[in-house]
Length: 350
Image 1 (spheres, rainbow, N blue to C red):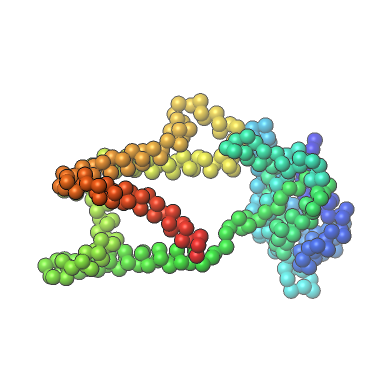
Image 2: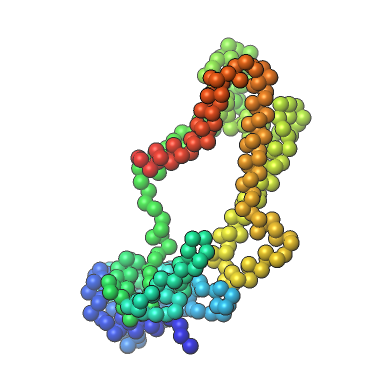
């Protein structure tokens, strides 16, 4: 029986203690505490019970369901993060932190050709690893542990990659704060205009200010009026609208959310092979055909575009069919379809 456990990780450290010199001083000290306690449990009183045992217990262990696609053994994140040991004669505590370790699926050492390079032929290629949750000192970074267990030229262990949960979180750059600032201004305008609308629109409806362009622009952002309009189902609001569009939009949004939920679920479920069997169940067609849920939005876009175009054509047939009218029609559609690309470009540029 072949597997990779914490014992193999500690054994690698014990066999090559000189490699600890590449680590930061804090990480090196904490790993040496673990190594010393594994040799002499009394070296650090209470460490074995309050720190090392919870760390070992929180590590993911290879379990059942492997033939059903179970390759991710997460361990216990909270138990690992709860480790907090006071080291005698040292100001800094020993604390645990959660790491995810990717292991070669055939447990080949990284010195072997083809190690850490198994790709499944799905969706352009998906890398395959055993994924184990490991609890190690929080003073260590995933980058230095990667250097330790997978140095250049490879090592005698099958460790391919170390990652922390926060490693893939991008840093907050200037573009993030500019976007947040702009969205905050928009939200603030909506709240303020809603407040003004709720308390003053009735009092000012007969005054000249209510007819001004500035007032109309402010009221168009009113959170109060817009929410009221969205949830108003009276017949008086349906004039000039295609009522079934709202029903199609609602069910399409639910369909999109349901499909995304199940697609993300496949990434963490313990038996993905069994999940695939739902394709043979007629009641699950709404999930397995979730790729088509966006098509209804294309349909609604086309219907609304045609509906509005004919309304304009009914009022202004000559202008609508002119060369200038068609040019502006396409210019308007391009701008409506690509505004998010321009915002994305601005975010990346800033």
